[in-house]
Amino acid sequence: MRNLLIHFLAVAALGAGQAWAAGGVPPESARAQPRDPATEAIQAAIAKPDWAQARALARASVEKNPSNPDYHNLYAYAIRKGANPEMDLVFKHYNEALRLDPQHRGAQEYLGEAYLMVGNLAKAKEQLKNLDELCFFPCREYSLLKQAIFDYEAKQPK
Image 1 (tube, rainbow, N blue to C red):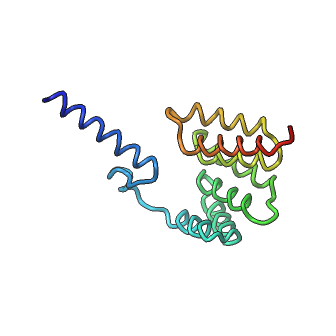
Image 2 (image 1 turned 30 degrees about the vertical axis):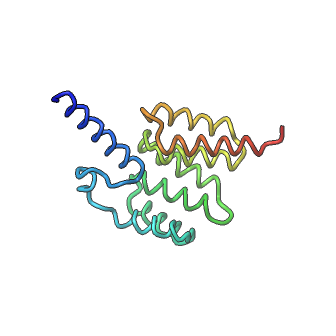
Image 3 (image 1 turned 180 degrees about the vertical axis):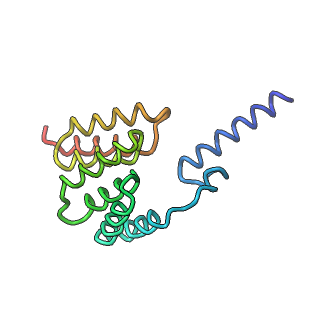
């Protein structure tokens, strides 16, 4: 009976972790962290999608706190997704996010997608390799970049 209870608890804990990783409710310890109003405002603009607003908010956040890798990542993302992206600026800010936090999985994924935008498949695959090393199990960022690379390769002339 005790072994059955231990097994049940282990499965329940694993399931809760997977639900959180899939976007479900995070554990109490993660929910206790204070929210960042700047990040929330940028993400709200991205969700619309209002790229000009997201870019302006992210740029202001970077100027106010240049040591925050999330702000650099969101700024590069807003530039990349908007009209006529300045790719030099995109690469500058993704790389700054990674300089500040080399394990920033979002910046790794988005940098790989940016490389695909400029036709640099080899560099995109380097980012996928980095994500493979960062994620003990396949993570969302790894899966999304892997799919983007697959889609990119499928569109290439044979």
